[in-house]
Image (cartoon, rainbow, N blue to C red):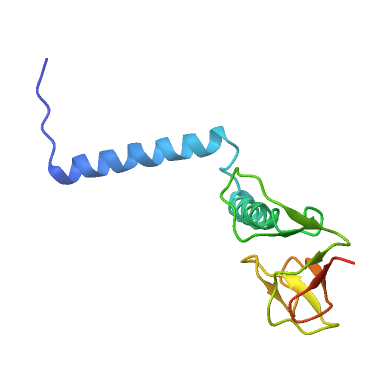
Length: 133
């Protein structure tokens, strides 16, 4: 067997060509080596971002809002008492009677709707909220 000697630059060029061929073959095998590939990747990234936004906000929606807990905060997995629709939560503070309140993204109450908009209820006094009626 004869010995082959190549320079450092030749080795780099050979490795670069091999890497490019491998990358092209990988892209071809998943259908991303054509004129539409850039657009396809951009659309996939957009879809993934939309999915992440949806997943992040799914737990704070009008569909799964059932009311306001009583007695402070609860650890995940523990039992909680919830004032549901039509009940009065009397552990609030600094409310304005007659004002509508919305659940904020951090779980607090606010005067403006967050995104997504979740109506919490209407204040009946400075300390009482009529839950989602």
